[in-house]
Image 1 (cartoon, rainbow, N blue to C red):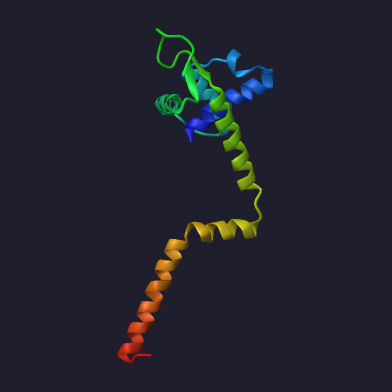
Image 2 (cartoon, rainbow, N blue to C red):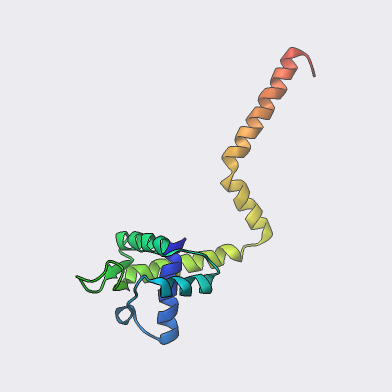
Length: 135
């Protein structure tokens, strides 16, 4: 999701430079697009990152630093945005470190509706064949 790629880019910069969110501003431009794409092995376009910035602004993860400039020219991450980025990062790390058995269990849990549907079809077809005397 480009929203979290954008937020993670800012958080990574803050951590590498030892800065707080109040001291870091960003502009959505071609340079930032290249930086995010190179850092994450993605292929986002400028318009995709602008839409992601709109979502971040709507969630109050980003805010405008100054008024009167370009819409995406002077943005700052908020404490809420820092929290969202760190939370998503930790969630992804936990998800990646699960055992194979836990991954299988989660897949079954995620698709239990489909499994119930297929089981119902199998039971109904077996019952129909039994009624028709074919089994």
